Amino acid sequence: MKRDGGQGTRSPGRPNRVFLSTGRTREAPSTNLPAARSSIVGREREMAEIERSLASTRLLTLTGAGGSGKTRLALEVAATSSG
Image (cartoon, rainbow, N blue to C red; front, side, top):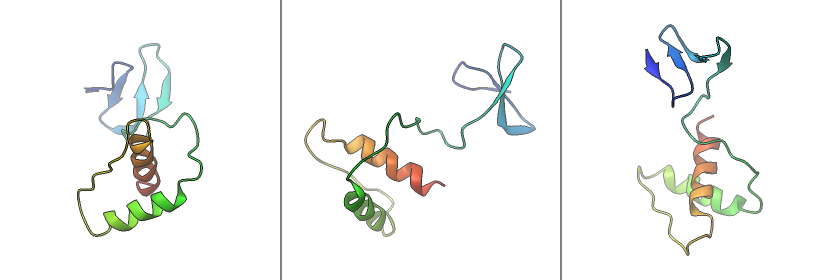
């Protein structure tokens, strides 16, 4: 059995369920991306550009000033493209 971030143990037969030490179960996230705490507003154009660029390359670097939202934008694109 594999540990799941210290919060529980994943069952080898059921990869989408996590058994907690309390004996309860919860649904495991479908990705290992952190959950968004808020929605992203007004970045549709940038998201579309990133998605177009990713269609033709495996590695894409986002650059910009610190605090401009590069990581948040990348996470949002990854979350929407992963399903």
